[in-house]
Image (cartoon, rainbow, N blue to C red; front, side):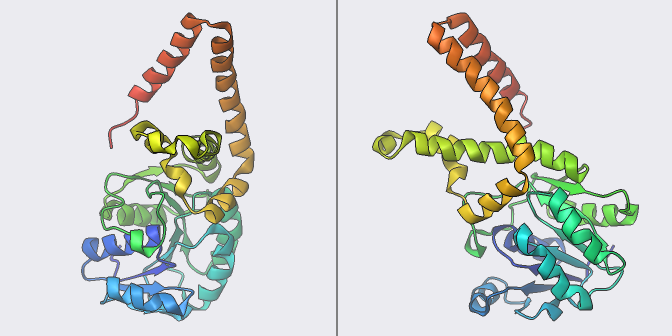
Length: 280
């Protein structure tokens, strides 16, 4: 598929990084950037002066690809606003961290109106907003595509082409499998980082080294967005928290009993799993 016009809606960290990367990956494509707030327009134009920027949903008209980078809760209303400007060949995707609920809310709206497939770039930082966007955010980063049973091979191929052009490693799985796996590798760590920060408190912060900083970095993310994500995937996150509770109970018991053998075994199990983490 030739991407001659690419529209990004709500260009924050992820959407803005996708827009910046797209200008390099598809130098002949016209970029269209939609923002909900008029006061954001000057900053977007300063960062990407050659793009069409504005608050009118009609900006997506004529786009080959539309990237929805707004929070999951606003996607249905956002899609409704752009429906009159889409064509059946338009490829529409998103960047949401939860997929089953988004699929159920968005896919029916686009049926017969455009081609839809869910996306989730496993990239980002504790920072947010357009000011944090960077061109190389997706280099070697996993991007999960979540086709439904009705998704055409052409739609999957075109979405794969787009993300690979931005430097990503594309992985495909169902929306339900996505939510189960991401709950354990992304959502659970955020919960633990947040509770670790609260448990440690402020008194020892002057002593914090790289270990504390590395394990708590993601706790600095936008609270309102993460609250929405955690509630949107709460059944899988609760299941992952129960699994974590089992591991924590093993550690607690070993310490209470002064059982060096059990404690060493647990720590070595964790170290062995950690060593299998793929190199970025």
